[in-house]
Image 1 (tube, one colour):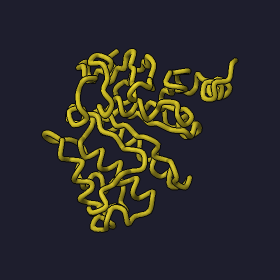
Image 2: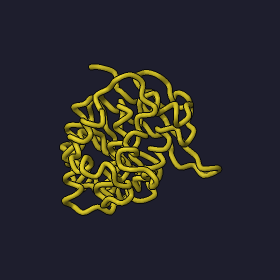
Image 3: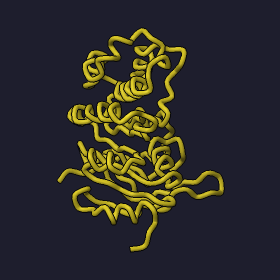
Length: 237
């Protein structure tokens, strides 16, 4: 078996004196989709910020393809091969759809699978709206731009933080329907979701977080609904 793409070992994170993560361990295999679920305040977004270098971490707590990256800054983590679709999309309001997409390519080196044309094939509506301001689109279309912007760096690992938040079920379905193609391009994916059902549908492996700790981990087929419910809400078995 090949080594994991991403390894997190005994990861801690703090906001000043407040400790937000407590000894988190997880691995992401090549081509895998890992879902991280949990209620508000469970530590999911903090985990994403630590992985991307927004929050400082111990040097060896995070490794990407065997390289320690816990000490790297956010731009350095992006250059190393990890990009994120942030919660709330955070598009640049003064830029068009296409300009927002091209911003995502600024850190890439060499050629990779994802180009503008391939993104437009993945999200055809963005080709039609490419000259529109990014923030003039619907919420679902803006989410497509945010995903496309992250893919333009041709990441090894794609992090998606609450991408279904505030979107209609049909839009969520259409966005998640693109994930097999994203994974076929060579990217491994970590999806942070509050929606347990959606997480179970798209993931090979699920981790549940509560109060900054992993409370349950396994393949969706191996985890009972009761076990997931209890780990999510902190109910004793």
